Image (cartoon, rainbow, N blue to C red):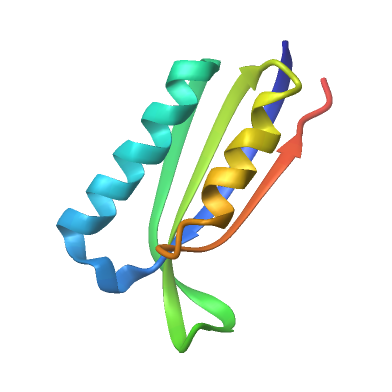
Length: 94
């Protein structure tokens, strides 16, 4: 098991219900395949630059431990989701 950190930014125009639904969907996917999952929702913050005509985004950081294959599957799912503006999965060294 390795430690990873996922940072993703959601489109804030989804509304409160849409953001909650997407957060639950992504976090449930992580919880099913990983252990020691910690979620830190930063809320809506201003972006450094416009992404898809958006000036703000909902930032969420998820820390987890998983096998080496899971992050690539997670990236694949996030890449095809148009509600996710940006994401980054990094390996955390001990």
